[in-house]
Length: 304
Length: 302
Image 1 (cartoon, rainbow over the protein chains, first blue to last red):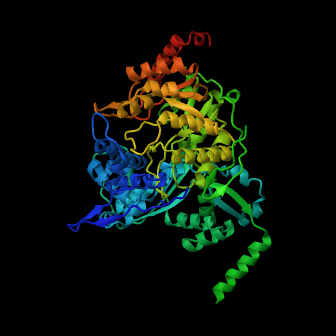
Image 2 (cartoon, each protein chain N blue to C red):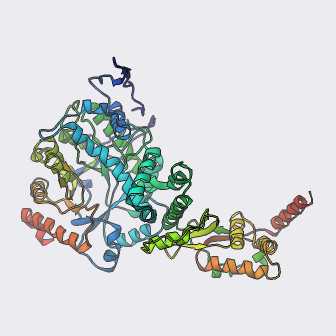
Image 3 (tube, rainbow over the protein chains, first blue to last red):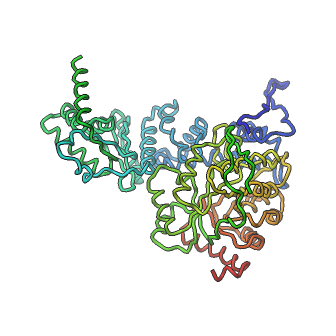
């Protein structure tokens, strides 16, 4: 069975210049039937009604409307569940408008409704109706990250005890893998305070500082999604650690980022925090040779 | 007896390896269960509710990891589990989403359900999913198509599946047979099991002016492995299946007729919205037990 109907259902221009549906063939294939049925739900092209029967109490229009009305209502409900705090912030009317705009722009392509709303942050950040309100997209981004952290893969978290298996003089060569639940967000406003206020049932939204870039780290600790702010230095080190830099290189980067005198202590402090809260999934000891080669490469690049 | 090797998906033809299941392969009788809902996790894990088994929505656990899967692991240590999907889209004319099938198989391998089920419907075509259980015209062509898809899935999962009749609101003028004849031939040709959703039969019978008892009497009794019970919204000219209310008296009445015809069948109450405390559903489940025992006194000694 092909995905495409074998016969196209054509339209023609009627006497009044209005596009008029051509009568459907007497026997539609299953593929044609499904195409028309879906089209009627998505676009309102209701030629499908020609194939349907009234019941003894009402018309096929009324009966078909159960599917048509159910479609957008159901998807809007999925979005409301996935973006609960955004819903609270926007209120029913605006959230309803946003949801229906998103549904029209992004029909679900996933078999699992869990992923239907994944593109809402991007939609809010780019759609002309909403992009000026940066907190809409930022709040959606935060809620999506929390939901993703909730059911991210179950890789075992790296602990301080795990690091104990490596000799202290080898720690500089350790590289770290973030836990699959961990995501760093770069937001365009200080949305965390707003999100917290809405989640806690505050009736008034705190004032937004739109000029402040906010870095948040979202991850899962003991099964629960967590979020906290991350300072510039720690965020830099987190990003570089995620890119595979060994601990020794991370310490050097921290030393050049801020005061070099206690850089190693600061770097160790960040690492300890990540380990204590399950933000890392693994460590790999890089061979000495690889670290030296990499250093030589970096020196050569600097000299150019 | 092996079934012919004509299952297709995306043009691929696979050799069938799943044998046509015989009545002796029938999934075990599980008693009286509930649809597992996150609102009840705590009560289930901390208490000992009088529920014999749970049915889980497959897609809710087709996720990378986290609490839901860990909770499911803990619940299945204590209760038999059945997987019930909503997105298989068995009647769709779009080729199967292999990623979805792989996820379904992986979940089945992990949770070892008593059986895997979904609905006799389609959920979308051309890469779109409408997340609804949509009706099919009951034509010979549709039947051949569904049969080939059921065979493909059973081969893929290496187990027979069970399919549920859905509530429908429209009928197609070009249907060539009744829903029950369609279902009877589908199960005969594929060996798939049937979930008999009593509420859905009631809803569709009202919406299409047919007699629900005809559906019951025409359904092959040896293929039914599960009853579903639920509530609905009556709009006088048609009924909408909402699964959000108490099982109404007329559905209990039909359940009585179903038990009489099909005998001892694993039964659940499903509630998808307006979910009450677990104790209320357990109490509603007692009504199912009471009716089943009234119709089949031998169940009382279980």
